[in-house]
Amino acid sequence: MSTEDVIRRSTPGDYFRRRVPVVSSVPLPPPLSSHRSFTATINGRESAGTFSPPTISELSSFLHYVAGIRRMDSTDANRQKRFVASMGALHPAHILVYLPDEGWRAYLPEEHALGSLQVNAESSAQLLDLVDQHLPGHRAAILCLLSDRDLASNYYDNYVPLLLRDAGVLLGHASLVAAAHELAFRILGRTGTIAAESLIPLLPFRPFATGLALLGAGCFSGDAVRDDRAGA
Image 1: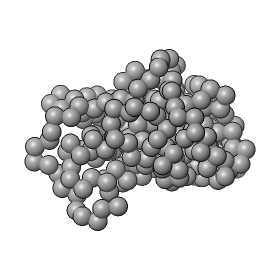
Image 2: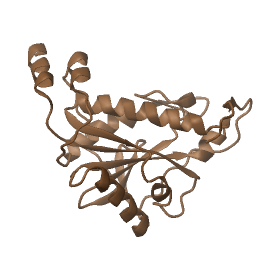
Image 3: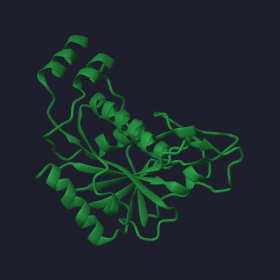
Image 4: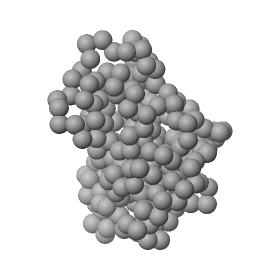
């Protein structure tokens, strides 16, 4: 990793944000709001060890509040206002989701939809095996962050530390969203970077794998449950 200081370009290039190529897409159901208090959410946030598959409604709400677009920048279409902070409002990380029995999907925030993906079978098998080594039999949805090097380099020199920090903020925010919606969540870090970066053939940008996580339904601690009831 570069140890040089990140430098913002005085004049950005002409690169325009590109999305992950999908075969087809299916709209997600409308997201549901969380009714947990902030205190209950904080107390309920923990790295889960037990998962069951999330429902499509749970996945919809989670993805919306993690990466949904609130508005676009009127002067630069690459910059987007979302629920989470990002480097210059660029949000360079694409969220890929592996659903058991369904395969890999990409979250399309512009449409609030999931797009089906054609993937490299060998890379997929390697990545899934690495995740299973961390938590065998987890039954969770797998989240994979693939960041766009070209988008970052359009605005910054020595941008790699920014991509890593951006992903860390995104995963931290995601952990709180999961807790707010009573979902199980576990961050796995940058496991399987080579397999992740070769997962999708013919990407229209240079990928940089920035993190994996597990998401699912799960059990919460008794303290979190008592906090919720006390605030009801």
